[in-house]
Length: 267
Image 1 (tube, rainbow, N blue to C red):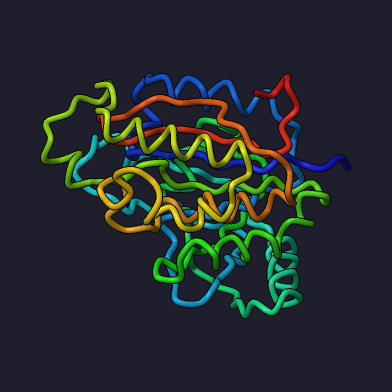
Image 2 (cartoon, rainbow, N blue to C red):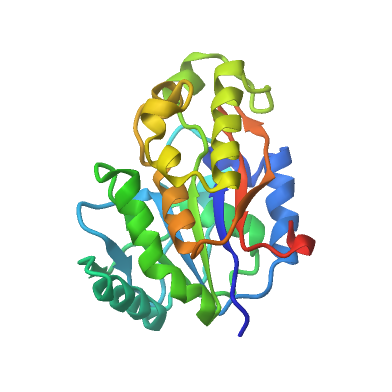
Protein backbone atom coordinates (compact mmCIF):
# COMPACT_ATOMS: atom_id res chain seq x y z
CA UNK A 1 0.00 0.00 0.00
CA UNK A 2 1.41 3.43 -0.97
CA UNK A 3 2.27 6.01 1.66
CA UNK A 4 -0.67 8.22 2.55
CA UNK A 5 -0.37 12.00 2.76
CA UNK A 6 -0.78 13.77 6.09
CA UNK A 7 -3.27 16.63 6.44
CA UNK A 8 -4.08 19.58 8.63
CA UNK A 9 -7.72 20.59 8.21
CA UNK A 10 -9.39 23.64 9.72
CA UNK A 11 -12.86 22.46 10.73
CA UNK A 12 -14.26 25.85 11.75
CA UNK A 13 -17.69 26.13 13.33
CA UNK A 14 -19.91 23.00 13.30
CA UNK A 15 -22.24 24.51 10.71
CA UNK A 16 -19.44 24.24 8.15
CA UNK A 17 -21.15 20.99 7.22
CA UNK A 18 -24.35 22.76 6.08
CA UNK A 19 -23.20 26.17 4.79
CA UNK A 20 -21.87 26.16 1.22
CA UNK A 21 -18.81 28.25 1.93
CA UNK A 22 -15.52 27.94 0.01
CA UNK A 23 -14.15 25.65 2.74
CA UNK A 24 -17.27 23.45 2.61
CA UNK A 25 -17.01 23.11 -1.15
CA UNK A 26 -13.27 22.42 -1.01
CA UNK A 27 -13.60 19.58 1.51
CA UNK A 28 -16.56 18.11 -0.35
CA UNK A 29 -14.41 17.76 -3.46
CA UNK A 30 -11.09 17.08 -1.75
CA UNK A 31 -11.90 13.64 -0.38
CA UNK A 32 -12.57 12.38 -3.92
CA UNK A 33 -9.00 13.26 -4.95
CA UNK A 34 -7.22 11.37 -2.18
CA UNK A 35 -6.20 7.72 -2.28
CA UNK A 36 -8.62 5.55 -0.32
CA UNK A 37 -7.12 4.93 3.13
CA UNK A 38 -7.25 1.74 5.16
CA UNK A 39 -8.30 3.87 8.15
CA UNK A 40 -8.28 7.48 9.30
CA UNK A 41 -6.56 8.79 12.43
CA UNK A 42 -7.92 12.18 13.50
CA UNK A 43 -6.04 14.31 16.01
CA UNK A 44 -8.90 16.58 17.07
CA UNK A 45 -8.73 19.89 18.93
CA UNK A 46 -11.98 18.91 20.68
CA UNK A 47 -10.55 15.77 22.24
CA UNK A 48 -8.43 17.03 25.13
CA UNK A 49 -6.73 14.94 27.82
CA UNK A 50 -3.83 15.28 30.27
CA UNK A 51 -2.12 12.16 28.88
CA UNK A 52 -2.23 11.06 25.20
CA UNK A 53 -5.27 8.86 24.65
CA UNK A 54 -6.48 6.81 21.69
CA UNK A 55 -10.08 5.74 21.08
CA UNK A 56 -10.62 1.99 20.87
CA UNK A 57 -14.39 1.65 20.36
CA UNK A 58 -15.61 -0.50 17.47
CA UNK A 59 -18.83 1.53 16.99
CA UNK A 60 -18.33 5.13 18.12
CA UNK A 61 -21.33 7.41 18.56
CA UNK A 62 -21.65 10.99 17.31
CA UNK A 63 -21.03 13.73 19.90
CA UNK A 64 -22.74 17.14 19.75
CA UNK A 65 -20.13 19.07 21.68
CA UNK A 66 -21.48 22.54 20.84
CA UNK A 67 -24.52 24.72 21.34
CA UNK A 68 -26.28 27.67 19.73
CA UNK A 69 -26.13 26.37 16.15
CA UNK A 70 -28.77 25.19 13.71
CA UNK A 71 -31.08 22.45 15.09
CA UNK A 72 -30.48 20.25 12.04
CA UNK A 73 -26.87 19.70 13.15
CA UNK A 74 -28.13 17.78 16.16
CA UNK A 75 -29.92 15.34 13.87
CA UNK A 76 -26.79 14.48 11.92
CA UNK A 77 -24.75 11.37 12.61
CA UNK A 78 -21.47 10.00 11.34
CA UNK A 79 -21.63 6.23 11.53
CA UNK A 80 -18.13 5.21 10.50
CA UNK A 81 -16.78 2.17 12.34
CA UNK A 82 -13.93 2.42 14.77
CA UNK A 83 -10.70 0.47 14.29
CA UNK A 84 -9.42 -1.16 17.49
CA UNK A 85 -6.54 -2.75 15.56
CA UNK A 86 -5.39 0.63 14.26
CA UNK A 87 -5.82 2.11 17.73
CA UNK A 88 -3.40 -0.52 19.01
CA UNK A 89 -0.91 0.39 16.28
CA UNK A 90 -1.08 3.98 17.52
CA UNK A 91 -0.60 2.97 21.14
CA UNK A 92 2.34 0.74 20.24
CA UNK A 93 3.99 3.45 18.12
CA UNK A 94 3.69 6.01 20.91
CA UNK A 95 5.06 3.57 23.48
CA UNK A 96 7.99 2.73 21.20
CA UNK A 97 8.92 6.43 21.21
CA UNK A 98 8.68 6.77 24.96
CA UNK A 99 5.32 8.53 24.95
CA UNK A 100 2.89 6.99 27.44
CA UNK A 101 -0.64 6.75 26.06
CA UNK A 102 -3.84 5.11 27.20
CA UNK A 103 -6.71 3.38 25.37
CA UNK A 104 -10.04 5.12 25.85
CA UNK A 105 -13.51 3.62 25.46
CA UNK A 106 -16.93 5.29 25.21
CA UNK A 107 -15.60 8.33 23.41
CA UNK A 108 -17.64 9.25 20.34
CA UNK A 109 -16.77 11.36 17.32
CA UNK A 110 -16.59 15.04 18.33
CA UNK A 111 -17.33 17.71 15.76
CA UNK A 112 -13.63 18.21 15.07
CA UNK A 113 -13.79 14.71 13.62
CA UNK A 114 -17.24 14.20 12.15
CA UNK A 115 -17.79 17.63 10.57
CA UNK A 116 -14.81 17.51 8.14
CA UNK A 117 -15.18 13.76 7.57
CA UNK A 118 -18.86 14.09 6.73
CA UNK A 119 -17.80 16.36 3.87
CA UNK A 120 -14.70 14.46 2.79
CA UNK A 121 -16.05 10.91 3.23
CA UNK A 122 -19.86 11.19 3.38
CA UNK A 123 -20.51 7.44 3.07
CA UNK A 124 -18.72 6.90 6.43
CA UNK A 125 -17.29 3.58 5.26
CA UNK A 126 -13.67 4.12 6.36
CA UNK A 127 -12.80 3.20 9.98
CA UNK A 128 -11.85 6.15 12.19
CA UNK A 129 -9.67 6.41 15.30
CA UNK A 130 -9.18 9.57 17.36
CA UNK A 131 -6.10 10.79 19.21
CA UNK A 132 -6.35 13.45 21.92
CA UNK A 133 -4.37 16.66 22.21
CA UNK A 134 -2.87 17.86 25.47
CA UNK A 135 -3.79 21.55 25.54
CA UNK A 136 -1.16 22.60 28.09
CA UNK A 137 1.72 20.59 26.63
CA UNK A 138 2.59 22.95 23.77
CA UNK A 139 3.82 22.64 20.17
CA UNK A 140 7.03 20.66 20.79
CA UNK A 141 5.12 17.88 22.56
CA UNK A 142 2.67 17.58 19.67
CA UNK A 143 5.47 17.63 17.12
CA UNK A 144 6.97 14.62 18.95
CA UNK A 145 3.55 12.98 19.15
CA UNK A 146 3.23 13.23 15.37
CA UNK A 147 6.78 11.97 14.74
CA UNK A 148 5.98 8.85 16.74
CA UNK A 149 3.07 8.12 14.41
CA UNK A 150 4.77 8.88 11.10
CA UNK A 151 5.15 5.23 10.08
CA UNK A 152 1.38 4.75 10.17
CA UNK A 153 1.14 6.64 6.88
CA UNK A 154 3.17 3.80 5.32
CA UNK A 155 0.45 1.38 6.43
CA UNK A 156 -2.39 3.06 4.55
CA UNK A 157 -3.58 5.24 7.42
CA UNK A 158 -4.59 8.82 6.66
CA UNK A 159 -3.50 11.09 9.53
CA UNK A 160 -5.53 14.29 9.86
CA UNK A 161 -4.83 17.04 12.35
CA UNK A 162 -8.20 18.78 12.78
CA UNK A 163 -8.18 22.24 14.32
CA UNK A 164 -8.20 25.81 13.03
CA UNK A 165 -5.44 27.98 11.64
CA UNK A 166 -6.93 30.83 13.69
CA UNK A 167 -9.43 30.45 16.52
CA UNK A 168 -10.70 33.31 18.67
CA UNK A 169 -14.32 32.67 19.64
CA UNK A 170 -14.56 35.94 21.58
CA UNK A 171 -13.93 37.77 18.31
CA UNK A 172 -16.41 35.52 16.48
CA UNK A 173 -19.29 36.16 18.87
CA UNK A 174 -18.38 39.72 19.75
CA UNK A 175 -17.40 41.03 16.36
CA UNK A 176 -20.69 40.77 14.46
CA UNK A 177 -19.09 38.84 11.60
CA UNK A 178 -21.15 37.11 8.93
CA UNK A 179 -20.33 33.52 8.00
CA UNK A 180 -18.69 34.57 4.72
CA UNK A 181 -17.08 37.84 5.80
CA UNK A 182 -13.43 38.29 4.79
CA UNK A 183 -10.65 38.03 7.34
CA UNK A 184 -9.27 41.23 8.91
CA UNK A 185 -5.60 42.12 8.54
CA UNK A 186 -4.48 40.79 11.94
CA UNK A 187 -5.83 37.38 10.94
CA UNK A 188 -4.43 37.29 7.40
CA UNK A 189 -0.98 38.41 8.59
CA UNK A 190 -0.86 35.51 11.01
CA UNK A 191 -2.06 33.12 8.31
CA UNK A 192 0.59 34.25 5.85
CA UNK A 193 3.32 34.00 8.48
CA UNK A 194 2.26 30.43 9.21
CA UNK A 195 2.16 29.58 5.53
CA UNK A 196 5.70 30.84 4.98
CA UNK A 197 7.06 28.88 7.90
CA UNK A 198 5.25 25.63 7.10
CA UNK A 199 6.18 25.69 3.42
CA UNK A 200 9.83 26.51 4.18
CA UNK A 201 10.08 23.90 6.93
CA UNK A 202 11.02 26.49 9.59
CA UNK A 203 10.17 24.20 12.50
CA UNK A 204 11.98 26.20 15.20
CA UNK A 205 10.04 29.33 14.26
CA UNK A 206 6.76 27.42 14.24
CA UNK A 207 7.35 25.87 17.65
CA UNK A 208 8.08 29.38 18.97
CA UNK A 209 5.15 30.94 17.08
CA UNK A 210 3.67 32.60 20.18
CA UNK A 211 6.71 34.88 20.40
CA UNK A 212 7.46 35.20 16.69
CA UNK A 213 4.18 35.23 14.75
CA UNK A 214 2.19 38.46 14.38
CA UNK A 215 -0.88 38.68 16.66
CA UNK A 216 -0.31 35.10 17.80
CA UNK A 217 -2.16 35.32 21.10
CA UNK A 218 -5.04 37.26 19.57
CA UNK A 219 -5.47 34.57 16.91
CA UNK A 220 -5.09 31.78 19.49
CA UNK A 221 -6.01 32.86 23.02
CA UNK A 222 -5.65 29.16 23.82
CA UNK A 223 -3.57 26.72 21.80
CA UNK A 224 -5.68 23.60 21.39
CA UNK A 225 -6.88 24.43 17.85
CA UNK A 226 -3.36 24.91 16.49
CA UNK A 227 -1.74 21.93 18.21
CA UNK A 228 -3.07 19.43 15.62
CA UNK A 229 -0.99 21.27 13.00
CA UNK A 230 2.20 20.44 14.92
CA UNK A 231 1.14 16.80 15.17
CA UNK A 232 0.57 16.76 11.40
CA UNK A 233 3.98 18.31 10.76
CA UNK A 234 5.60 15.65 12.95
CA UNK A 235 3.66 12.84 11.28
CA UNK A 236 4.74 14.04 7.85
CA UNK A 237 8.11 12.38 8.33
CA UNK A 238 9.93 15.44 7.05
CA UNK A 239 7.92 15.73 3.84
CA UNK A 240 7.24 19.26 2.62
CA UNK A 241 3.96 20.90 3.48
CA UNK A 242 1.95 23.33 1.42
CA UNK A 243 -1.26 25.23 1.82
CA UNK A 244 -3.88 23.77 -0.49
CA UNK A 245 -6.86 25.84 0.60
CA UNK A 246 -7.38 29.19 2.31
CA UNK A 247 -10.60 31.00 3.15
CA UNK A 248 -12.34 32.51 6.17
CA UNK A 249 -15.44 31.60 8.17
CA UNK A 250 -16.98 34.35 10.31
CA UNK A 251 -14.06 36.55 9.33
CA UNK A 252 -11.66 35.51 12.07
CA UNK A 253 -11.65 31.72 11.59
CA UNK A 254 -9.10 30.92 8.90
CA UNK A 255 -10.12 27.65 7.22
CA UNK A 256 -6.72 26.80 5.78
CA UNK A 257 -5.86 23.23 4.82
CA UNK A 258 -2.29 21.95 4.57
CA UNK A 259 -1.10 18.81 2.84
CA UNK A 260 2.20 17.02 3.48
CA UNK A 261 3.48 14.62 0.83
CA UNK A 262 0.60 15.48 -1.51
CA UNK A 263 0.44 14.32 -5.10
CA UNK A 264 -0.18 17.32 -7.41
CA UNK A 265 -3.48 15.86 -8.63
CA UNK A 266 -4.86 15.81 -5.09
CA UNK A 267 -4.14 19.44 -4.29
